Image (cartoon, rainbow, N blue to C red; front, side, top):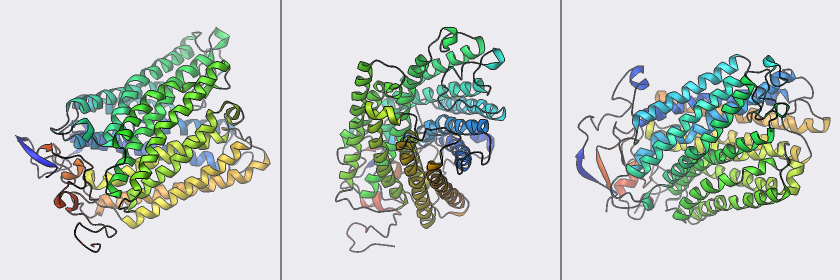
Length: 572
C-alpha cells in the first residue's frame, strides 16, 4: 500500500508545480514571507554567517597560541577573541542552527502539513534573532567582551565606569544580545510544540513521527522551560552592572556562586538544545543509508525526552570546585552518570541499525558516522569530569575544552553539516558534487581530531584553559592543535565552495535522491509553496521500507552502491 493517498482538500491558492523558491520574486517577498521554508533558509544563511565569523575568531586564538608569549596580539585582545568565539558560536550559531534553520525547513513537511502552527510568530522569532544579533555586532564593534561566553561575575557585573574593578569591555550590549535571542528560542519552541501536537497529517500517529521530529519536540520543551532562566539571569547581571545592585558582587553583598547556579541551570539543558537535534538528524541519516527501520525506534524517541528531563538535574557538576557541600556534589555526580544512559541508548541503537543494514557510504552517511564516533568520545570523556576526584584535577583545563568540542563540534556541527548534505537536494532542488563533498568531510574530520585530541593530552597534564601564555612543555601540543585548526578551516572552505557551486550550477535534484521512505521525500525537490499538491494521508510508517513502493523509494534514485529492488547489479 502506498505511503500517501490524497484527501479531497487541496490548495487552490498556489500552483503545486511551482516551487516555493519561484512563487514570488524579489528581496521583499523573502523579508515578509510567512512560508516556513523561506524563513528556515533565512535562518540558515544567518547561522552560517555566524559560524564562519566564530570560526575566524577561533583561528585567531589558535594562531596566537602557536608560540609562547605574544605571537599576533596582546593578552587583552586574546581574551576578547576567545570570548567572542564562544559567544558567537553558542548563542548565534549552535543553539539556533538545527532547530531554527533545518527544523523550520523540514519539520512541517515531515508532519505532512503546509506550515507551522503560527506562521507570523515564526517570522517574528527570526527578526527577534536578527535584532539580538545586531546587539552582538554592536558589542563587537565597540571592542567585544573579555569575560568568556559564561559572563562569570563579579568580573562581568562590576563596571569600571561606575567605580567597579571588573571588565571594561562592552558587556551590556552582548548580554542584551543573548537576552533578546532567548525570546526567539522560546517562540520557536512554542511554535514547534503546537505544530507537532495539532498539525500532523491524517494517519501520522505519534509512533509514526520521524525521530528528527521527536528530537525537535524534546528540544522545544527545553527551550520553553530553560531559556527564561537565562533571560532573568542576564537581566540581573545587566542591572547589577548598570545600577550597582548587590546580587552577584560580594563587595555589594552579593554571591557570585549564585550566578553560576542560575547560569548553568539554563546552560546545561542548553547543551541538549544543541545536541538533541543533531541526534535526530543522525537518526534520519542512518535509517536512510542503512535501508531499514531504526532498531529500538521508541527507545530512541523516549531517550530524547529523557535527555530533556535529566538535563535539568545535572547543572551542579559545573560547580564541583565552587564550594558546594559534599552531599550535593555526590548527588550531582550520580545524576551526571545517569544522564549518560539516554545517550548510550541512542548510540547502541544506531550501531544496531547499522548491523546487517544495506549501508551506503554517501556523503551524508559519512557525517552521520562521524557524529557517532566523535560524540561517543565526547560523552565518555564527560564521565571523567563527572567523577569528583578526577574533576578536581581536570576542571578548567584543556581537557574540558576538548570534551566540550567533541560534543558540540563532533556532535552538533557534524549533525548540522550532515543534515545540510542530506536535505540540500530537497530544499534547494540542486545536487552537489559527491567527490568534493567527501574531500571536505575528510579534511574536517582529520583536522578536528588533530586539533582537539592534543588538547586532551594538554589538559590531563595540567594546562589551564583560556591562558594567553604557557610553559615550554606545552608548546608542541599547541602547535599540533593549531595546525589541526588550519586543516579544519580548509575543510569548511572546501564545503562552502562546493555548496556555492551547487547553487549556481548544480544538476537538478529528483524527488527522492537518497531512496528514503520518509514523508519529506514524497514531495518534489524543491517543494511547492504548501509542500504537497494535496493533503497527504499516511498509511504506513516513515521507516517502513518493506511497505514502501518502488515509485516511492526509487523515483530518481541513483546510488551505484545499492541496487534497485529486483535487480542483480547496481545501477548507474
